[in-house]
Image 1: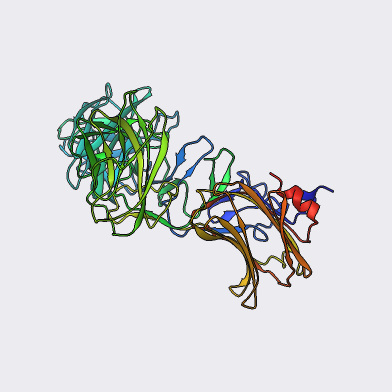
Image 2: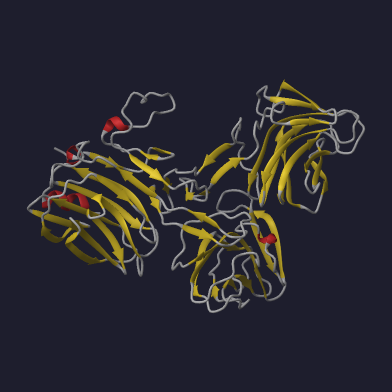
Length: 558
């Protein structure tokens, strides 16, 4: 019999949805596929409940090697222009028109003789947002407008040229999508309460244009269109979605503690308030996200940049800065991080022509700002700046598009209940195997990785502390065993624990680490909690019996 046939549960990070991570075994716990084929299975018996709270700040590296974020179309009825949208000053809309995508989902928008005939939608948004719509027609000044400050972008739809881009627009883009259609977008850093579409701005001419698929979203660039209805459209790393991360190649479940990015603008470097001797150009090149939203920094002399709206540093607090960067030329140049308000390079980046994430950890000695610095002539591209307080290492990227107090990503956690009721473990015996790797080195960090328990006083758990792996058991509030194994801070490893009332065997990477007294514990619930620096979990399997030493050696050999 193959060892896998003895397993009562097998989790490999493959099938998941918001709030759930589905196990391969038991086989009746698969999620329904797109056809609903598996919808008859019991999906509540042995799958992990996943939680990250009401939080949309998490990212992952996807299977294409690109940073993937939470995405949301903040507009309602994004392609139903006769619903949430309001036609003003004699404008009218008619559905059923030929669209840019070959459908008949486009709309004819006609303006009256009123100079300011438009359609508009009320919205509540702030920070860096990109507003876009597909448009076609013989209009010489088709217009997207923010009606709070009145900032507008005007485009000639005959050739796609921009005829007016007001100073409140960070960047504008007109993409030719074929057959006379353009995707027109404008990026604002403003408080938005209304967005508008004008067939032709400030003109008494009766003009018609065809429009389709409007979108308003956080960030410097328009992403793939998300349909919205009476609720906003959402995609990407959703709230409570388990993150299958491919930063190490194969997909693994990324579990991290709570962290915050204090940098007010993590991508909009033009918005940083102090930039002596630095010219910043937004959307200069393609970023690690796969969008053209990375910024070019050109240093005309020795210079630096920081954002005075970010929270001031606290003396004695450890900070970790991180940023993606690459050079734009082959010249010798100095560029990197600064802390404690020095304004000069404290930690240089070894730049190449490829994107790489760099980090710098230090302890603050004053309340000055932190940021980036470079020498005269430095020409670099940057993306995803992050500042984390009380941190000895960087966590995964947390986008911040304008929150002055920082953006917080909540901790990942998973729970599976009723272990014995569901026959996942035997009566006072069982085995479990975990295959995982630290997200960052363990040195100096402490935190649980898995925790079997009835309650806080009756549990079996493992945690990391200062480069060691510790296993412990509490029975009725008293420590039953507490053992430590020294680990390489960046080791990939498999650990197995097999127990009954007589003895407990612990194997790590194919070797018996120690044999302990057995214990009687009617385990009921199981939690996976991120240690201080996070882990990437590749696989876990459970067995209802205590496996032999030979079997544990086989299961834990890398």
